[in-house]
Amino acid sequence: MHPTLIYLYIHDIDRCLKQEEFTFTNDFVINYEYGNRSLRIKKNENNPYIGMWGGNISNINLIVGKNGSGKSTVLDLLGSNRHKYDYDSKWFAIFHNVGNRFTIEGQFPGLIKEVESARLASNTHEVYNVQLYINFESLRLSVTTRSNSPAENQDIQFLYQSKDSAHDWYTHQSRRDSRATDVRYERKYLKSPSYESIYLFMSKEFTVLESVFTMNNAIVSIRKASSMNALPESLNLEDFEEAGFQLYQGIAEVFLSSNKRQNKINGLDQSHKERFIVSYLEVIVYKGLLEYLRSSGRMEIPPHTLEELKKIQFREDTYRSRVKYLIKLLPILNENSMFYELMYTHLDYIDKKFYTSNFEIRVPISEETNYELLELINYIGDRLDHKSKDQPPYYLNILFDNMSTGELDFIHNFASIYNRVKQLSTNTGRARTVILMLDEPDASFHPEWSRRYIHYLIKCISLAGLPYGTQFQIILATHSPFIVSDIPKEHITCINVTEDLRRIVKKADFGLMGNLYDIVKNDFFLDSPVGEFAKHFFTATVERINAWKEYDEKEIDRIDSLIKSIDEPVIRYRLQECLDDKRIKLRVKQEVFDTQDELDIKISAMERELQELKERRRGNR
Image (tube, rainbow, N blue to C red; front, side, top):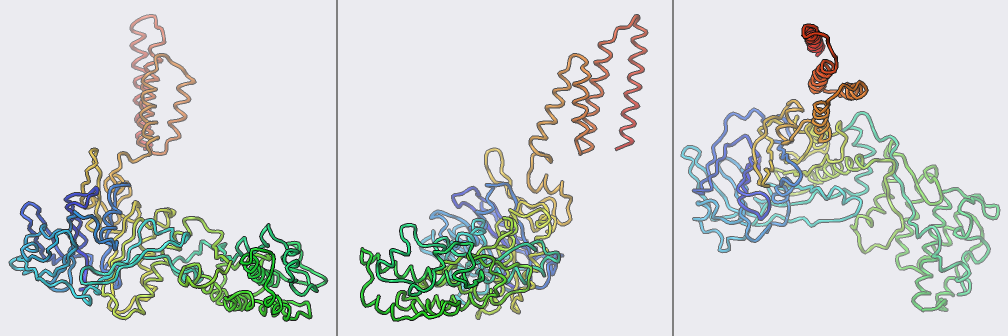
């Protein structure tokens, strides 16, 4: 059996949850009583879900509840590296290591009398980590004074994808991981994958996840930054000429100064690729010159620099001659010239058919993986991903076009997981158990993708090639009834919010293959199975019918048409019944009869007619 997180008790973390417990296993029955600070752990010999999710995943647990109920608080407490959650926090988590050995992490040892009696921490506010042994016959606990060693703490590694990290891909934010220490198990954030990994996943692995490729129109775009399309507005080529420098020694026109749509200069045909690359190098040269001018405070290039520039000869106006000339200028003007020379090499490898303009490269994802593009993405991405902060700006951006927000989040989510699992296989001293914590990963997905999410997740982990002897334990917060219907109810924890804002934690009433109506109504604590507007529409329609005093055929027909538009048959029947009753009563009230007998006969006839209508409707239901 692999190490596993089995239990969390939150007494008080100065947030919404107080004296609540969460169980993440079916292998043990855990009872904790705060009144006498006693903890009891018994084996459960009958766990029907062993092996349910395949050989790579030990179990999957869900946490569900309304917004603000505390789902993210639980995940943050377990998965975050901010271990001093609050100075006065009181909580503990239990991990099963092997056999009868367990580990407890937490704050405030006084929550468990055996831990407190061991006098493990002089400062009761510090996070502690202790080993616990249980005699399963007598159920007695014994706590050692020894914490896990750093090596033992490497047995479990947390990977946490918080809700706000889903957009790190776009903003390039980063969070720091924590290493395994003698205090806690190692916590790592499931960070955004590199641009290279995203492209590889989209062009290769994604099609294995989903047989019908829904993003056939997706494009990888390498686009020049806006500052690369022209010189600054405050400068023009004449300014540099006045300073004594003329690009191409005046015998060829500068691409930057020519019309953007013009592909022919002085009889020289130029493809989009050639204009893209040449104009890119031209800007780098001019940016180097601009730094000289700014440093001197006037439009003047130092004489020795000007002399070196003029020594570079330009004799023939061809694409290769231009490139060769510009690259020779770079070392004189830019200390990072080597980086731009390598950039030219990568750009030159890209097939000219992908250069769709003088400013952009566009490669369809639906094509096979383009390894020349992959090398370029890797080279640019090193800078964009902040992996090499000492590198100069490349003035090129990587974009993924023709994709919705949901599609971008889908790729981000699974590429992050896939990339991290692939990394695990290359790590030495790897964890035996990876606790993957995902906070509402399907928030922007179409319901069909939510319905398939658990299937995709299991498949993604399997495809990534998990190292031998490593298993995943997954804890996932969600609002999706489709995801709930994939998980046994014993593995689903629901957090309800009462009217006085207290939180009540309980196991789900419905889970695996449950009816969606039952799941939504019970596990998600909904007040009604229909939208709030529809709920008020029902009440308002009944009140409107009951308020009628006179027979108005147009008004009755209008309400009748509205009722017929309702799709739910039971609700539609109840409203139609209410309308029919009122219609007959108003007709009777407004008709004048000569005798009481005639009136009674008419009432009886209408009552029979009403009864026949009701029976006919019941037969049609």
